[in-house]
Image 1 (tube, rainbow, N blue to C red):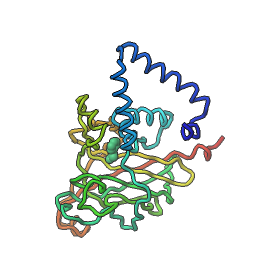
Image 2: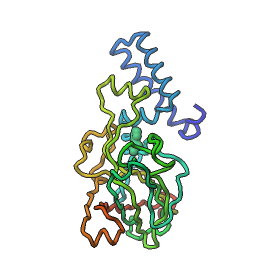
Image 3: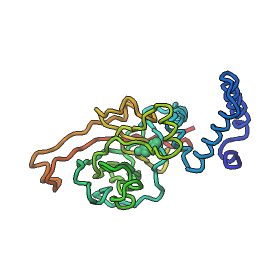
Image 4: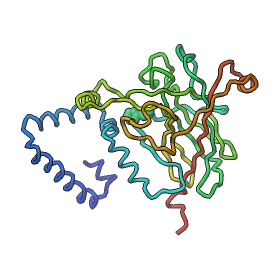
Length: 279
Ligand code: BEZ
Ligand code: FE
């Protein structure tokens, strides 16, 4: 509770907590919840805490998406925010230009090379030359580095700066849909309630720049079977970006590749920092 009190003012806590408890009591009264049932709920929540799955629980109950949308509801003319999820890792490697966020490993050849590019600008259209991008995603199969023993540590993760004109490009591989972790209490809850655990393929972005609000978002791709039923409900149409396939000899030579590759354009607009905005 001490940590909550540090981030949430006591007025907000005194306003929200009694109403949250009243809502829970109302459900308990309505459904005549028994001693045994309530203890099962407490056991479940204890296990969620022990296995560090509270963020995952917030995500799959679509609570994270709701809170994110309320937090950013007043923003317009900027790239939509999206939830961070539990799979971000602190201190990813710094990647020098030309940026490639993965190393080769056994199995990577089964994926498609993808170059993601775009420009980071402020709401007035000015390029932000000091912006730093932080990317994380799954590989073309086998999921995140932390789940896939074949992958080097921090594979498909990395931070890097943009060019002087605010543009960026990084080489990665087209990610695939994957399931959120299902081996813990949240996975058992999903199974018990008949909710599938799949997320559409996506790439996570954190973008930071001096004088601007930080942005956390995700990019999705058209025709994904889970676009309309992401288990965390995080898909926004403005974040679905087409993939373009390139296979001409000229394009392959230019990229130094001998297999077709894809590109995806994702321009990013950041909001000037609240404290930097004119009064
Ligand atoms: C993810 O996209 O990394 C993620 C989001 C929510 C739950 C689990 C994973
Ligand atoms: Fe993810």
